[in-house]
Image (tube, rainbow, N blue to C red; front, side, top):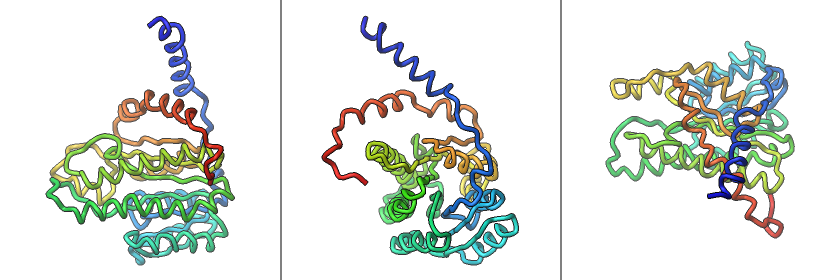
Length: 292
């Protein structure tokens, strides 16, 4: 107990003070000028809004989703808003071959890649889990496994540009929610995988950042329709949410929290986890392991 009072508690206090009050770089729209960015799930909702923000900032943008017609409209609007270039590739992330080939095609269209924004999900409704194993598998494949495939395919280009991976997740991937078991499982998987990969990149000196974006209820048409009559909660604006995701990626933040409640980030930014994640990697000897 004397050791804790004399050494551990002061160290903990200093760590928390640094974490919460350290000066962070300020975001500037010109940071995206000429940057090469992929946005998945960009035919509507948050993905569409991110594409428009990026276009206004003068970025090169390649968007993907299933709807070719919607993507054509998004690309047209991006060019009107001032995108350095804008392209689309339609397809489904249920097909892992498409996911891998899409990244290669997007890289060729833009001549490289600076930021990979992973935003797509399979259609989800709020309901009790009734042993639908097929839907659990589909949720994991689209909402999680395709994210891994895309990030693996993009890594060589991102290493060249010292780029960023931005993973759009959910409060349902941080705390348990009823009626969302398959969706929640896939979002928890994103946290576990990409947070671990972030640590591996750090140990291997790979200068590619990973930002996990934890979102509450956002006022997209799909989300509002899904919760109608079931969930009584205020929805945050999708336009502002999209901008906060982009900011987090550009500033290479580890996590971004966006919700209508001011309490969300305060309660979920777990200092205990941060401290343990800071300590644990120092137990590893990685010299003999194969690096990236």
